[in-house]
Image (cartoon, rainbow, N blue to C red):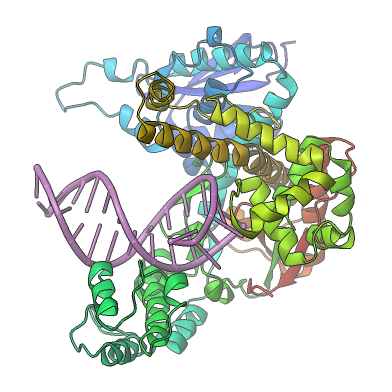
Amino acid sequence: MSAAVAWSVLGRSDDVIRVVDLGADGRELSARLLADADLAAHVAAAPPSRRWVWSDTPRWYPALLAAGVTVARCHDLRLCHAILRDSAQVGEDAGMRAAVEWDGSAGEMADARIPATLFDLTGAETAGAPDDIAAALAEFERQRAAVAHAGDPGRLRLLLAAESAGALLACELHAAGLPWSRPVHERILEEELGARPAVGGVPDRVAELGARVRAALGDPTASLDSQPKLLRALHRVGVLAASTSRWELAEYEHPAIEPLLAYKKLTRLASANGWAWLDEWAPHGRFRPVYVPGGVVTGRWASSGGGALQLPRMLRPAVRADDGWTLVVADVAQLEPRVLAAMAGDTALADAARGVDLYSGLVARGVVPSRQEAKIALLGAMYGATTGDSARLLPALRRAYPRAMALVDDAARRGEEGGVVSTWLGRSSPPPSPGWHELQQQASGPDASAAMQTQARRSARDRGRFTRNFVVQGTAAEWALAWLADLRTRLAALAPAPGAAADASGPVFRARAHLAFFLHDEIIVHAPAEQGEEVAAAVRAAAEAATRLLFGGFPLDFPLDLRIAADAAKA
DNA sequence: AGTGCCTGCGCG
DNA sequence: AAAGCGCGCAGGCACT
């Protein structure tokens, strides 16, 4: 009877895949070689509790998904390396910083395997590269040791598991795609812009507005798309704006302003999400962005291509469930202030959040006069406002919620001093650059100029605002990851759709309810119509599970705005 | 032609 | 200059 396999490390050795099975203690139990074509079957045959360890999820998982195989758990060495390398809980002696071959972004690591030239085929080019099985085993052992010796191994393990689950989900979201209605998108474009113009042409509504602006400027050839030229044209008619931004132009009274603002709005729609976007990014009923887990320093996801995280509200009706399916759209109400309350153990702020709307809770307790001011004050507290209404409201916030304010103020102070701050689960901010330290050093010297001192002061404050926000934004990202990971597991346990059929989005995601979109604090699940309520219950249960996982019994809810509908239009 | 920066604006 | 955080992308423009 052999010990149970806890981990299976995947890597390459010569031209084949090597699978090394490890016990819970990290000891090697067995190893085997596999051809690429046999990997999916091997993974599918393993028990779902198996955690697959691999260099970089986008390099291994898409092929499995294409073969119809999903994985319940993995350990993404690249993403976990990035966390452990910077975490204040991990000592320098863990060697994470020295293992620079793991530092690249997903794209850079892919490049590292490619020989520099066609003649450089000595085999050495892959020796230290992450895909190599020896490199993967060494890094995994290094990471296990780093976690074991960390200040709070439990939280760090949670973070690494959540990050890795996110890596799986990012690939799945891309494979599944967001259901997108071409007719609805086209209808919106035609209503706003007019008929689709010929290639290189300008939509009718844009042309009309442009003519109105030029007429009002008294300049039939005025260029509206070049910021410097537009600014000069405005100055000539007495609009002495310093920039051509929407907010500033709106301050001026001139017949050119109204059509100009409309012109800007429509050209933005046409260039960012017009017909060309539709053809390129959602040609066959699915929008498939590339999600980049850990792409933001705080731990938030970034995206690449198609502007996935910037879909304008105007286009949300184009997010439309397939026939016989529905969407469950949910976002967290005021995620970041709630996260702040929980992190700080601020029971007074948690108390104000008891209802559905935290901002109204502040008004009800007489902290600020209006909901709008509550929002501005809290955002200012988390972003580090120094002027205006927001800064004016901070003293009231400080009186009412000293613990929450102390947490962000302390993070800001540490940042200004050049220190490192960490999220709830242990992701740490990157240290300041050598140049930053140098500037602070020189500015504190005896022969520092006043200009240099001002610059250093400003640079310190900038970093303070970054670290102030880092702890909150980063912990909110952790809550969201925990929510996603838990929901992903719950959805996988639901019954398949009746009469599920294969189609272009792949058998796995056509067969059952699945996540289709994620944006910081919002998710969209695409589900068989009759499972709408069941999925909604899973979404809520996952949010509660995430809250307990991170914050235990702290008395605070993370209420969701949730709707079940055929499309994702915002209320 | 390719690059990198700037402005502006979409999202949380 | 949208007061204060984090992003991606398009278009113009200066540079190589």
